[in-house]
Length: 158
Image 1 (cartoon, rainbow, N blue to C red):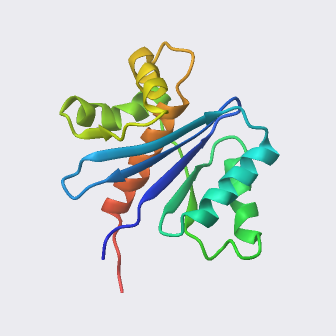
Image 2 (image 1 turned 180 degrees about the horizontal axis):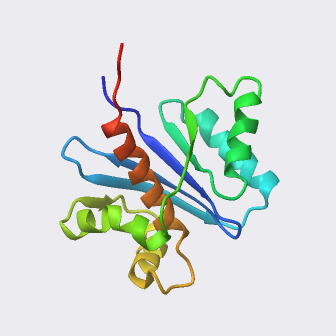
Image 3 (image 1 turned 45 degrees about the vertical axis):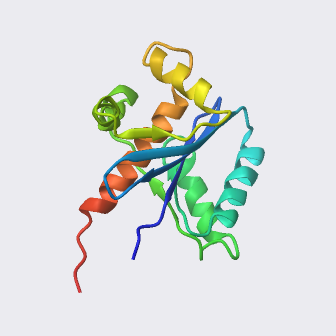
C-alpha cells in the first residue's frame, strides 16, 4: 500500500501557506503547489476545510502553534469531517533549525519543485531565508518533512 500524500498548513497570523509535499520512493521531496495569502481566521478555516474535503487521499497536518491545537479539536467535532485524515503537528525548535531537516536534501538535488505560479515566490523566499520578510512557505515545508519523517519512524504493535 502506498503512503498517503501529505498536506501541511502553517497557520501564520499574517499569511496562510500550504505546500503539497510528497516523498517519492527514492526519498526525493516533491513540492507540487503552494499558496500565500492574507486570510483572517474565518476565511482560513473555510480554505482548510475545503482542502481537507477535496483531497480525500491526503493526510493533512495543521501546526499546533497559536490557535492550531484548538482548531484541530474543533475540526474533529465538525460533523462529517472526522472521516478525513488530518492531525495537529507540534513544532520543535526555531524555524531555522526546522528548515535544516530538508536543506541538506535540497543541496543534494533531492528536492523537486513542480513549476507553477507559486515557484518564483517560493524560490525568492528560500534565497532570502532566514533574513527575508517571509518564511512561511519554508516553515510549511519543514513541518511537512517533519510529519513525513515521523510517519517513517512510527512503530506499530499488535
